[in-house]
Length: 133
Image (cartoon, rainbow, N blue to C red):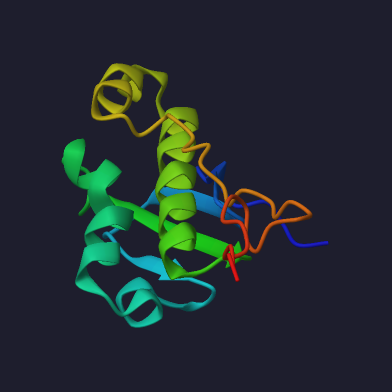
């Protein structure tokens, strides 16, 4: 069994079908996702900003290292899941950060998921095209 690291805090984030397991620890601001640099992994600047947003909001982006394992969903959902995981892990690190995270909306889980397809329909709500003749 691997020895437990000191000062490492854990948070789980979910968004759409993506699940992120996130560990934060004091460091120099490195963010890795699935063993790769987060900028390389996500590839889009918008998603990079989204992932870093809780750290930037608290002005801690140069003081915290983040390690994340993500699976399921697409890139956008994964980025949202990592963001929530970071916020929850930071909360474990220091409970006094709660008001700042809460005011930025980083502790709220985005519950929007894809609606299931219903029988008799082409998609979730779209029916088949009506033919008069």
